[in-house]
Image (spheres, helix red, strand yellow):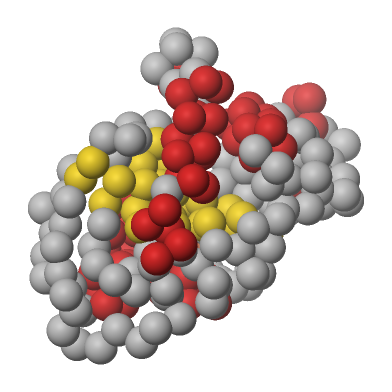
Length: 239
Ligand code: SF4
């Protein structure tokens, strides 16, 4: 995946950013390639963001690393016992996740943080394969509307579900049936949200806490094969 060049616009952008660099990172050798997911291969919790930041993941080579969204996210994961340290600075910083895996819906940094529909579709196979690879997966936490939409499409395809008219909302929980990971929503921890108070640390920790405590998580068993027809019902609940 790190050698993928399928989306010409994103390839051009990620490499241009890596060449030009931001002044404060002029001594960095930017990653400038698709950024893979990171975390515990036995994770029961998958956290999905939008895409790597141009001078964050696209610089460091690790998702949510080297930018303020990542500072917010990993500090919270540390407080919940899901990370061994509260910061994520670079590939050599010793960060390890326990029970959690972090990725993005689109693996290359997009201009203005806005991948096109075609680019998102191009990249969807990588998200699907990450979901497939997490054999103990029980819950997917979607950071923001974009990630939510991408996850919903991927889960629909994976489990042959009918089209969902699910709506994103902070703290919402989507239960799709036995054997299918719970889908939980949070506002994205972007500076735009965290600096305006739209998403506070308390709010985010609350979602994480309820995510980990939810007894239905334990009852979801993704290892069970779900064939063409599943017992399907969608229900939103406010935790
Ligand atoms: S966004 Fe995904 S599909 Fe497009 S070039 Fe990057 S890795 Fe490949």
